[in-house]
Length: 240
Ligand SMILES: [Fe+2]
Figure 1 (cartoon, helix red, strand yellow):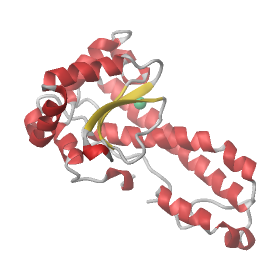
Figure 2: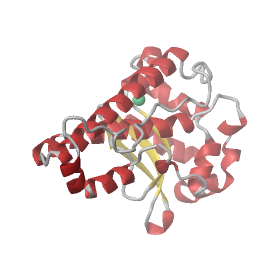
Figure 3: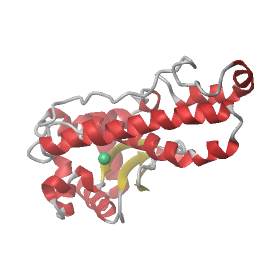
């Protein structure tokens, strides 16, 4: 799988490629890179019902997430061609498209894995003892954290995401952050779990009842995955 490190490595070597290859035909495959692909969901489309409908999940995964992947690959390919052609203006013009679609791919890939079928053992906070202790130490109680997190989600204006992150610095403390549009968590912070607050994540089922979506999301949060991310057991940013 391609990752940004591979891409940057290529970009650093752009000059030899410029002279060796036709800029009309450059693509990710020629560079020995595999395009990003839509990851399979770790459960069925109807597995999160009744809290998130099968219709939402199927559209969200197979249409919305797929579009981010498709558009990211197209933008990366165009960027490679622009680099080889020495067209800096074209490279700059592609940055926002790469950020938006790359962020969409990263965020949704994390989101699917930090959800689990309601009633499963993964959805119990007991599946993340160390994380819950850290939450209690930071917010006083799990319930108080949920209130604070929910308020942050409902405070997002327009489209965006809410995240519990483990800070890369500052002693690795916990913090609630929101990101706009498809901006991913960056800067060394580890996303423990995220909640998609785009209307496509809930509107077909909850309509304007955003607060009910936020309340019910707790029934499908995968605490086991969250605990693993908090404990550094998984390093997902290199798995895309
Ligand atoms: Fe989404």
